[in-house]
Image (cartoon, rainbow, N blue to C red):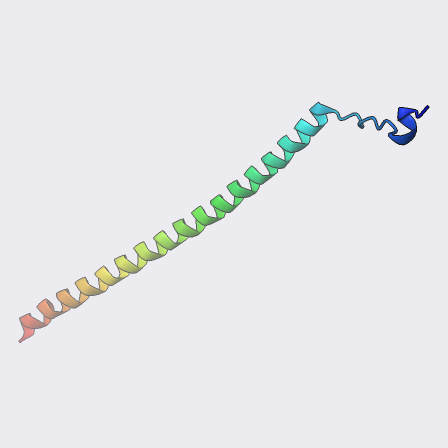
Length: 79
């Protein structure tokens, strides 16, 4: 007589701790979210720096335009 376990031995699954797996996945997800948040913060700081630089350039250009306009009016008095 052929015994079933001789040809097909029983392989019992390894016991998995569901809570450990869930906590590992949660830790991975939180790490990924943290990395995304850090990257978003870097981008936000870069955009803010560029906005400030652009604002300063525009202000400087307007100041130069006003100085040029005021100088011509000043020279008109002497002419």
